[in-house]
Image (cartoon, rainbow, N blue to C red; front, side, top):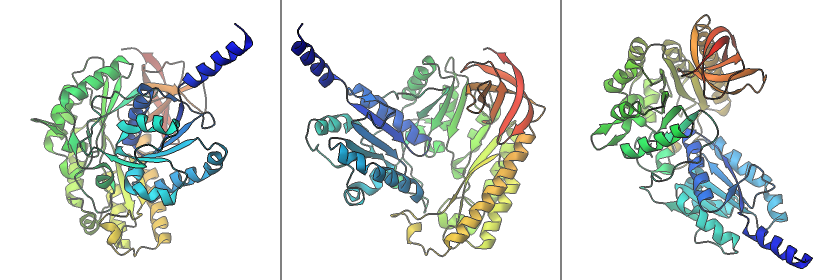
Length: 454
């Protein structure tokens, strides 16, 4: 074959090479799961995922809109790419997910570098839109909201490497807490069929994931036919090869005795629960529209501590909500100590346009919000440290995940209650080790142990 023929063949192969997509996800576990769904749709559509922005013909940001800071991070990242867009006019830049749904067409003016915007219910159209744009067309839409009934039930996520697989059992939220954008960005609740969920879990187990985290904005609201969330947990626990079951997130108002009973039985269901309280003040809880009182929340915590052995309880805390006084804030600190949280995600309030709270008078100064947040963080760290130190001298079962990034001779994993643990190796990902805890290092347990195989 002569040189010209070789060049023609090479050019043809280059033309046939799949377009490379850089996909970066911001936000919660549900966003990470959505990123895995998008990854599957893209590869099924003939695209190749890349970890290099420089190599990509398409850059996609899968976004969060729960807090203003999350959106600012994405907008800042987009602005840094404006120079790259000028150098490579054919580069496609897209915004997916909750921020895309919230802003929609507004992104044309806010970020003119963006070529397309899709809400979290519109991912199916992404491959076709990208193909049309790569072929020189404008596509059908700049913004696509998608199907409000979408659950992506027939799509198996393209999972990242690890031992824990996320499985969305439902999408959307019906609670409409006054500060929260989620029901507006993700729509109303819709549950997936039980058998569809079980099939996805069986597939993940077959792919080497021994642990599942069931996801929903409020898993307590799951219902398919006669099956509620505790019923679903019972069926998931029967899947062969599955070792551990976790779930996120539970709304305190809907946490009933049936679920508490299932958790108390233990087995594959991990003794860990994330139960967002947000505030310890009844007045603020009412303004937030949370649907429970401080006393009702603490009563459930006491029942959990009594019935679920070795429970690790985590929460979300929000300070600086409109009209929050120093007394309201003090009630939150008091509740934190009474509940003795093992972990907490802490935030200062930022108004989200379109929510009821955004219409309330913003009367808590920013410097006060920052000060209160620092006090919450300090107390949360103290409580977490006390909780971890209670583990010293105990032997815990650790599901091994990876070598420690700080010391390759040590391996990291999680206990059944979700605590991070470190131990000298060698170990292998996906194996269980019995670790005797000798000390606490930062937020992690450290100990020595002997590898156990299942």
